[in-house]
Image 1 (cartoon, one colour):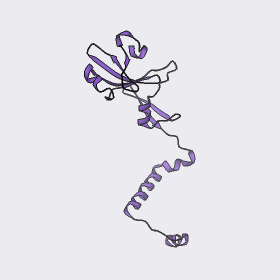
Image 2 (cartoon, one colour; image 1 turned 180 degrees about the vertical axis):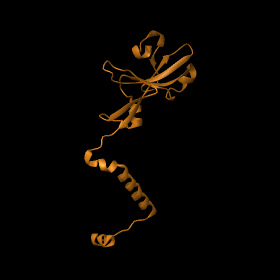
Image 3 (cartoon, one colour; image 1 turned 120 degrees about the horizontal axis):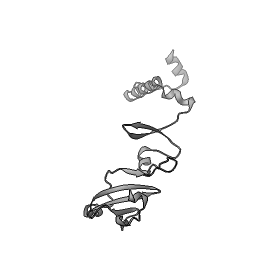
Length: 153
């Protein structure tokens, strides 16, 4: 909590790790250290553990939660690594659902009404059938449109 409120909080002893681009360390306790990265107003925790182990490999990223502060208007920033892994870009829609007291975000895409037919169950089944036909070689090649029409009759 102190790291989010004030990186210069004395007990944290925050400092940039030498030889790294954007990685910082902070003191958690006498023997524990954590490393983190700053991206705009988001703190990405990289690693937390015993002093020597953690600072020996500052580039290592251990799976720890990523935090983002909720602003006055209820907005949050999705950290760049999260956006990248989910393929979310500026302007994209995100569905938010509360499940078991957790907010679950699902990236969504709008489909133009004129293209909606393509995403119907029936059309997608036809697409899968056509893909299977192509994979197994159940296709015909015609030299002209007339040959195609003749074959259809």
